[in-house]
Amino acid sequence: MHKLFKQLRNKLVVSCQALEDEPLHSSMIMGRMALAAKEGGANAIRANGYHDIIEIKKHVELPVIGIVKAEYTESDVFITPTIKEIKQLLSANVDMIALDATNRKRPGNHDLDSLYQEIRQLSPNTPLMADISTIEEAVYAEKLGFDCVATTLVGYTEHTKGQSIVSNQFALLKKMTSTISKPVIAEGGINTPDAAKLALDSGAHFVVVGSAITRPQLITANFVTALK
Image 1 (cartoon, helix red, strand yellow):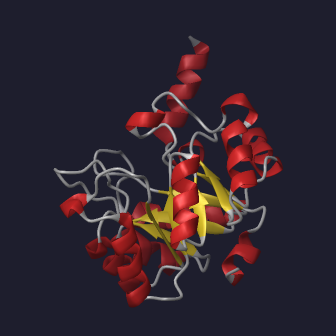
Image 2 (image 1 turned 45 degrees about the vertical axis):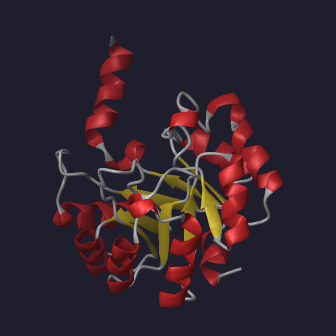
């Protein structure tokens, strides 16, 4: 097991991301957001895009799990979909790379197996996180050699619409951790500290929380909805 997984065992990773249509979209803001997360006790940062990652690394010395979100017209895969985005992350010197490892059609009709092999040729020792949506995808990612799997895409693929890892007391997460031997990371829909703790109790190696910490427009909307 890579030393980074020992460092992050039972810890909190904060996802600091803001897309172009969001109010906080700015590398400068994401750098400060990461600093705020560090001051709150975060043990690592998940970040999107070369420029955000470079800025974040100026402000914090925490490990960075890097992704690049990119849209391709012929595919629904958008989290680090091709080797082009992988190279951007390697040039940003991230500590771990996360990528979509679902069974969906990939850009250029490339398959996950060939992309994985190409990544390992470029950087044999960089830990790789497989963002998956089903147990079957988690099993396949482990077979390929990914260092960990994350539940990031549960509910975001055609065959998992309406699902959430927090439903049924993290039943899917529990089943996943009992099925594969690699670390399983809980990410997606974890909106409270109690839910984060329950994810760890359900077998997650560590927990990634994003919107509930770093997207104030969504946090505000939750309050407004409750008051109605």
